[in-house]
Length: 359
Ligand SMILES: *Cc1c(COP(=O)(O)O)cnc(C)c1O
Image (cartoon, rainbow, N blue to C red):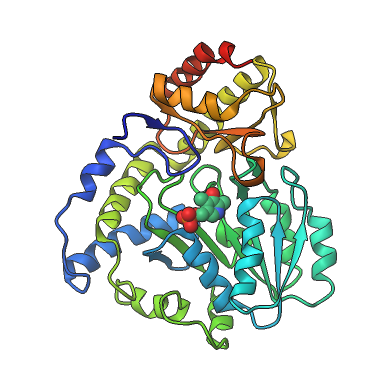
């Protein structure tokens, strides 16, 4: 029984309204009813993605599209910018897809440096760059605008930007910044259940994909484009989540995108204040701290696993006890999705109540 509320950095808490939308009766995915649903989502998605390119719906987790992008877009060599668990993994994934790939790696918590990236790209070895905008594992948000300014100097290098945990949290103007492929997932700031990935592809990236063998079928970007033109997806999609998506998009536009960004920023500040007040530190460089979650360094040496468990069992609130190699050395609190000052203050108050037992 799930009797606790999620404050982990994905999946996040799903609203009752979104859950209700999932129970809309299923229709055929080649029916006019489906096309209607798809077409209703599209302009809202394009506005949210800040793009005139199509926005595709993939029935997969975000990794499906992350892998797909590599398979669709590189024939020379991939440069993987690595600054945490997800971005580190991408190198491994590219190699498993049979691609040549090099790491550009910084310490977890540090940001990808545009100047160093420029030097790597100047070698002319690469035709694709993978970058995680917001490294969820260490709560670090890369300076994407500056990074995209560097990429703009290299028209033959396609950019794939994972915005899984920053999408709809901060503005990411895809077209303005020249992002070729931007991707996200349903279970992070969009606050839907997992199972749907959303992505948008530039004309330049389609042109590249057309020249690449071995794109496969399920994640073939050209296949997505062909079906998109009919208001459909290549194969049967997770229709309940698309109903949930339309509901969520309408809610987002009701609140206003700017207000949504501001709200996330404010909630994140409230968590940061709690961190400072209790003598903890942030794991990432402060200037590059994420706005969607807080990765707290366990500098007070508490038993993180036990703290997290106690909070869940006694207070019915679930935070995260650290990811991968920094499990136990950090803990993470999400402020993504539908949180409010009240819900975040409540979480922090409950944490305050048990904290003295652990430090
Ligand atoms: C959660 C997350 C992923 C993985 O998403 P899945 O939906 O599990 O495939 C990838 N990148 C980042 C930055 C994430 O936060």
